[in-house]
Image 1 (tube, rainbow, N blue to C red):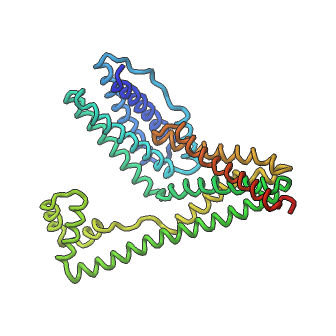
Image 2 (cartoon, rainbow, N blue to C red; image 1 turned 90 degrees about the vertical axis):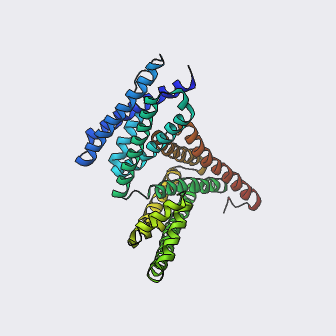
Length: 364
C-alpha cells in the first residue's frame, strides 16, 4: 500500500469520526443556532468521508473499518459541560486548522496522482474546512475565548513552577511537609499575582500603543489624505498584493477612513482585565496539584511522589486534550509537557539537596 492511500485511509477515519462527534454535540446542544450548525458540519464531514471512501475504492484499496474516537467525544462533551461552548469552539478550531494543513500538503504532494474531479473535490473539501475554522473562530469571539492561551499557559506555569519549588524545598525540609506546602502556596499566590499583573500590563500596553498609532493615523488622514493612501498601498504591497492592484484598492477606499484604518491597524480585541483574571486563576489552579499532598502527608518525602503524580497527571490530561482536538501526536505532546515539568522538578530537587548540604538548613 502506498503512502498516499495510507493517508487517505487516515483521512477517511478522521472525517467519519468528526461527523459522529459533531452529530453528538448537536444532540446535546441546547442553543438552537449552535445545534443546527453542528448538524450542518456533521453532514459536511460525512460528505468528506464519502470522498475519501470513493478515492480509496477507485484505487482498489479497501476503506478501513469505521471507528468512533470515544475518548475525543467524551473529552469534548465534558469540556462543553465544564467550560462552555466557547472553550469547545476554541479547541475544535485547532483541529480544523490541522486538517487544513494536512489536506493542503496532500494536495501539493499528490496532485499528479489525482484526476481533475478529485482535485476539484479536494479543493472544495479544503474550502469547507476553512469555513468550519471561520465558524469556530466566530464562536470564540462570541464567548470571549481569545484568552484560552492565557488559561493554558497560566495553568502550565503554575504546575511546572510550583512543582519545582516544592520539590526543591522537600530536599531541604524532608520532615516538615506543612512548611513546604505553605511555602509553595505563598510562592504560588505571589506567582499568580505576578502573572496576572504582568498580563494586565502587557495587554494594556499593547492596546495603548495601538490606540496611540491609530490617533496618529487619524491626524494623518485629516492633514494629508494622500500620504495616508500611500501608507495603505505600502501595507498592501508588503502583504504580497501587486502594486497596481493595491493602488486601485486604495483609490476605492479613499473616502472610507474607518476601512483604511482597519486595514492598516486592526483594533486590539483582547481585554486586559479578563486576560489577567484568566491567567491568575489558571495559575492558582495549577498550583493546587503539586501543593495539596504536603498538607496531607506526614513527611515531605512521602508527599513528594504524590505531588509529582498529581502534577504529571494534570499536565498529561491537558496535553492529551490538546492533542486529541488538534491532530498532534498524543505521545509526543504528553511526553513534551510531562518531561519538561518533571525535568524542572528533578533539577529543583537536586538544587535543594545541594543547598541543604552546603548550608545545613534542614534542621532550621
